[in-house]
Length: 310
Image 1 (cartoon, helix red, strand yellow):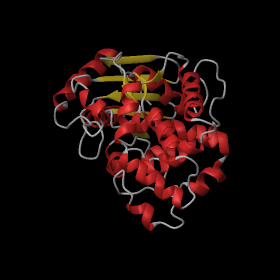
Image 2 (cartoon, helix red, strand yellow):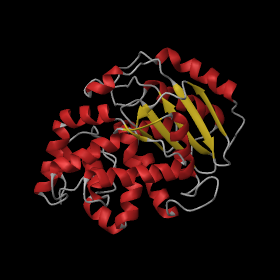
Image 3 (cartoon, one colour):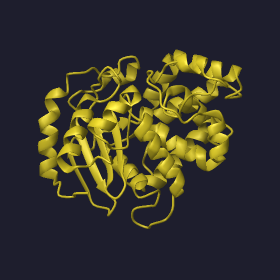
Image 4 (tube, helix red, strand yellow):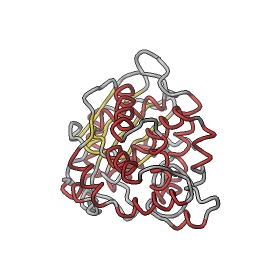
């Protein structure tokens, strides 16, 4: 992998795609996210050797949203083991929107097709050990603190509250799964934990370091200490390839070829073995729910520097 990308070059590439900032729309179905500024654009690359470069408004914070699904999956697998998790959530991609209930109704035994759609992510969040939503979210935050070596990261309470109050479809998914014993206990408590999970807030520099840790097969970049078992880090990255960009995952694999996960805040996390982590932020979303600027920038970088894994 080439590492001749400088901050000046990265600034130029970001400037090159900044004209697309208003081609999409910020997520307005979550009231708190509708306040985001489409011109808050940023990118960071964290190499596995510890070097980092960034461009744009790299100190601007955003919420993880669906990117949290990858991190929660890693923790749930560590808490419960593969058999337990995948008895309740499948491994197959779907061409349906991330919030669809359609496949949940069709599939037998009624388990979500994968952990990256909302139904699967809700089930995974439910599996994280903890007696209360606060304990589950606390353990997830501690995990992220360990991955980033940054204990300042928390969740955005305004966004969490906004999501919780408007999460009618996610409530429906949870009640449907509870009917079929995929989840148990309080739907409201599971949703509380999940919306706080999605509202964890960081910037592209912190997010790129998480991507680099996955690229380093779960080892801390500085100490070399194992944080995520190697085979579980691989499972997470495989889901990023097959399901990480909602129902645009196939075209993204062809055009970009980087294991990646997007979120409706406009962030995208990429992770490349032997290279590092890439994080992009651009709040305007396309019709699939992916960052317009993020998609353009990652495609340009991948093609220019031959980053595709295929």
